[in-house]
Image 1 (tube, rainbow, N blue to C red):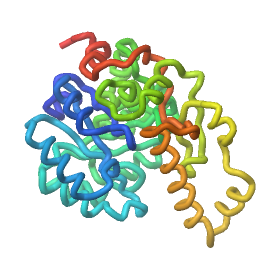
Image 2 (spheres, one colour):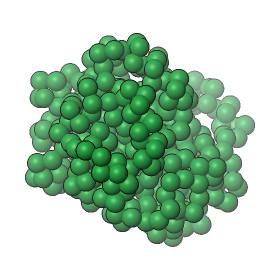
Image 3 (cartoon, one colour):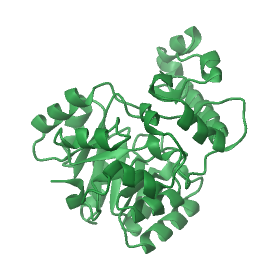
Image 4 (cartoon, rainbow, N blue to C red):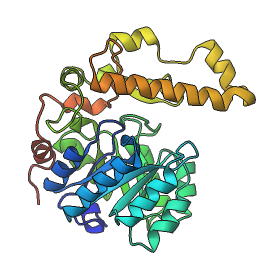
Length: 314
């Protein structure tokens, strides 16, 4: 079943939830373009701001989604989930943990739940709870990426879980790559990085221009931001910062007593760097993006980005 049969959208595309980047303007533009936008709940500083956004999105009567981080680090999860249930969010994408709680709560409410999975072990765990789709996070996805290629991961998922639709995340930035993913038998695609340099995005002009002028060869993976591999543009600051933890951080990560606290410190420091670089003038240029910025050649409205992806194929 195609994604545009699962969800009431024109094209089988989700504008991927991008931490810090995705905003309500982008969501509205995505929905007006015939695709589904998805926004991270953590992009809102307070629950009141999150609720305000849900009210705006709900009033459109169109299809949108919310990304929930479902591991223990997200102490706001229950409150965020409650608001999603209250406003009957059409679909939720779960990331970084077990989706059991979310799926259980959403099933009776008629809310679809799609689960990010980056390897077969995680897919088997998520599949036990019968999600509405699995999102295959590939090795060329932006942000927190997987380790397997589309050719490795997608056929394995389709074979192991023939009754669960598979959505591909990573590697789509133009019409050809979009069609290539659909030809692998996926139900739809999740696309993120090509929307960073959109007119509706609130990130700095410098961040957008970086997406225009840098390419796939300039994307590197670092563990310095969150403790797990995350893709960023290889700016001079990133090169000076280094891509891997230093010897002390590696030692502390192996220590059961200090591991939890170090992860919290690394994550907080990394997210602060990303936020500062995305929204203000800073010499600390740490810009999160995936290899598909290769396809970004100019700053465009989201409607035009979508038109170029699908080439108006109905």
